[in-house]
Length: 89
Image (cartoon, rainbow, N blue to C red):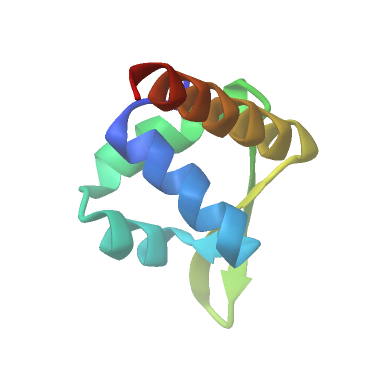
């Protein structure tokens, strides 16, 4: 679920940023709006990301943040990658 470039980028950015606006993620990851929407939806369906929709003044605002399950899944993913790298050394 996390391994793809965009999903891994979303998770890595959110682990540091706590929460991020949709446009911020789009710029950081250099992806299209549709591509980012699809990946965020999949992470939300998995329970890893929480999406908040609202307004900032009159402008629509979409923010994403990791859930507790998302933080645990990211930690488990990093641990698995570290074990894989250790086996290759």
